[in-house]
Length: 256
Image 1: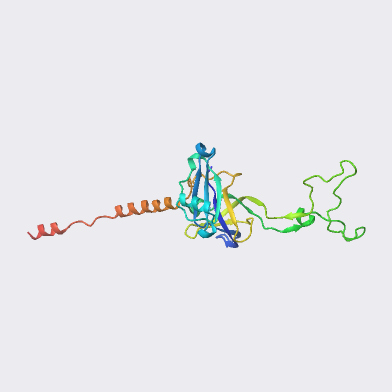
Image 2: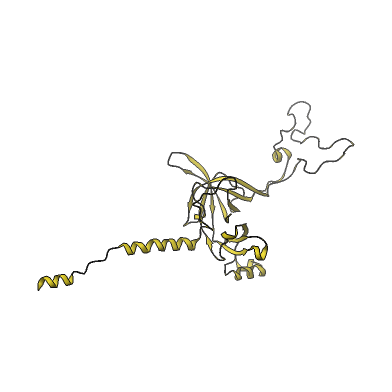
């Protein structure tokens, strides 16, 4: 099990694929996602990494959290979330996770806080059909009907589907396909809709109902790892360049 990431929902758009299909996608932005702390089995009883994303002004952060960020040598973050990981997939504090943590074609689960709808009736909240719209109903067409019983038990059970507060709760959408990623801009384009409003924070996980691809980066797609890989690719290219032969000595021998 490897870490997920924190991203900000920017909105929805569509992509035109090479085969002519148009795919609706949600644009998610990874904004300076760094490891703030570790949770180990020896110290905390479980293995996890605490990630932070976004930027926050120091004056808007509590003194305790300022000390927490200072201990990790990380700038104050706007959003913090914890992800369970296997002990071998722990990430060093201060490392930055990039968008190449995922790749096109991979399936992920996205969790976020749904848009609040306020106080909603039974028809909107629970998709009730309502009462008859013609004869026999007097100004109660959208009511939820009877809720209680007779003398026994004579009460309304908890959990009864009735009118009440709707939305503003944690929702997880599973098996969303990643259509495209942009490492330079930190963008992840996910097919379909994602819970939450524009500008809201979401958490992205590897899909639990599908197998994780074998070529997924472990323990994560790190910016330091990408930089070292680029350097390794550049060094062999320099070594492969042929050296110019020294022909000065040959010309002198021919003159003699």
